[in-house]
Image 1 (cartoon, helix red, strand yellow):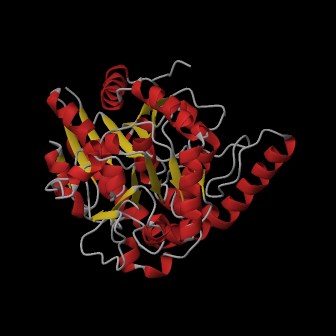
Image 2 (tube, rainbow, N blue to C red):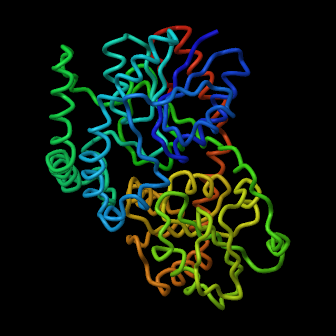
Length: 425
């Protein structure tokens, strides 16, 4: 029996997919202790894990970000990343580090599993020696001149021009976004007598990457990186089927419109999509991602809910319109559904660019498209079979994975061998 400590951002997109992994580890007689924001205590405890409450550390809940800090809504992806680093990630670093050291010491943890780029994990490993694994539920964030820099959404290319562009872009992003915060973090490392590590913030022992190889640009990969497919979160508790659910089995194609649970300003995508698709020969299903959202005008061919059980909904759909949340995109592609994507916050710029590159969807390259843009993209996607064919090819690849089972086996292997878990290519 091993003891695993999870450390994750306080956000449903990072916690929900790991709940089944925690539960499976507990069912295999391991212990799990989970450190994250207080708002997710119930979800953690439902997974069978012990909840480790923040003491000195603090978390910003992804669901509350835009309510508490409305100034962040209209920021570009790069500006928002700098704002988050300056106002949340760096100020929380020292407290989260101290909390997590205490948890690792108290539990005598065998393995620490942390979100990719969750900074304190690397320092906890350096100080305590605990084995350390990372899991990425975003596109690969490792800088590489072979791929566009994080947050740009630039088109992928392999020419000398593209590599030069990428190299310069990475340097600029580091200088403008990452370096100022890293100076403060490095100063903290020095203050506790730990040599600053120049390595990336992903584990050299085990790096699990959600998704499939064909949704990621061609690039060199770390030998310890394993694609694991799509982690399936539990269906939301207390979410029943609406009275109109039977209409989804009618003759009209069903199109889902969703902005997930984080960037939920309905003016971004939901309202433009409802207006653009009004009167079309489709049934539009929109999920608002929170209770009490008044959309105002809802056309006759649209149905609205705060939340829906996607596991039951996806097989009934013909297409998905989304702002590019990685979880929703993966869920759609695993069901062979083509996508219209329009997002520019968090990692969504990079997700949208990969959807377009894969051929499985249309990237509108904006956070707030017009109704005409949405309608035009849905029409193109529904009349050009290449989008659905590309999505179905990805669905075949997703079907080859058992994400939860693979994650459990990889973590157990690391705990048992205490050596880097190398992937076969």
